[in-house]
Structures are given as structure tokens and as C-alpha cells.
Image (cartoon, rainbow, N blue to C red; front, side):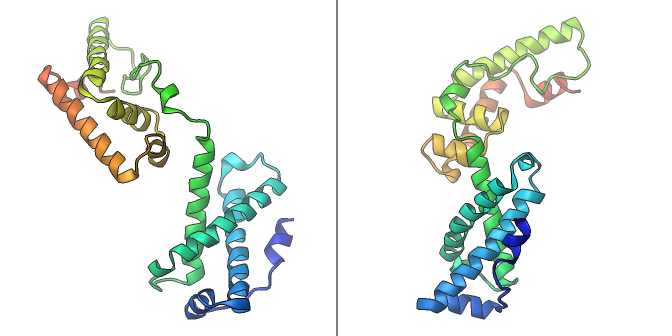
Length: 226
């Protein structure tokens, strides 16, 4: 089926100017160019899904083809929306393929977090756990372990006292759980730029609060160093 998909459309050779001209035209010429573009993008997306995504290797080939077909439709629209950004520094098809693959990556990430909820993520209120990654691999001495527990408790308290609810939820999701920025932005009904600012302010507030309690960054790094 993969070979059939690759060969289902005749290889139409266009230079950059021809692609731009025909995609911006009307009637049959534009329709033919759009169809050719969709088939090219479908092949690129299928290759990415089948060859570069180890997490999809358990899917049947038919499922991957269907995913590529669906994503290629959206990819064509994305390319058309960004035509004014094409500068001719590479082949048009190379530029369009990159857009298509980025779209596939984004959509797969969204699918992974389809049922994700910030409310569930932060419901238990435990930002730092006993097995947090900042704790050293070798067991610390009883004295150092007690000091670490005390500092982690202060950090956990600082997160509630120094941050707003939105700052807390954003920082927990992005910094501790590595949830993609666009997913968190959507959950908070904001955009990426505003989320960057929110997290920046949260980190600054947290740092200032901890320093006011005598917990400098250097001290904490030294305390939890591996």
C-alpha cells in the first residue's frame, strides 16, 4: 500500500515560480497544483510517521496512510496560508514539506494530550515529590536528607504563597511535567507569548521569595548536587 501511495500521482516537475503561479491561479490549473501538492505532502508525512516515529510502529500501515491523508489536507491549507512567507531560499516543495511535518508533530502532540487537564495535574498540590529529579542519585547522609526535606518543603510552600493560581498551574505543567507550551496555553485560554511571560514572572517571584527566606540559588544547587 505504501508503494501504491508513493506512485499514485505522476511526478509533476515545477520550479518555484510555477508552483507559486499555479497555486495562486484559479480553475483547473489551481486544482491540479493543489492536488499535486497534497500528494507530495502526503508522501512526506507518511514517511515521517512510518520511519521517524518509533512510537507509531505498532500501528497498521492502513492507519498510517489514513493519518497521512488527513494531515495532508490540513497541511495544504497551512502552506496556502503561509505562501507570503516563502522567500525562495529553497525549493518550494522542501519548504512545504517542512510545514507539513511540523504540522504532523504538532497534531500528534495534541492527540497525546487530548484528555489532559491542568486541574487534574495540580489537584493533589504536590509540586515536588520525594523522588524528584533534583535529588542526588547516591543516598545523602541523614543530616543532609533532613536538610533537603526541609528545603523542599519550603519550596513547596513558596509555590503556593509566592505565585498566583495561574502561575502555579503553568509552572507545574511546564517545568515539572514537561507539558507542551501550546497545550498549556490552550488550557489557560491564552497564547504562547503570554504564557512565556506568565512563567517568567512565576520563576522570578519564586526566586525572590526563596531568597527572602535565605534560600539562595547557589545554596540550593549545592544542597541537591549529584
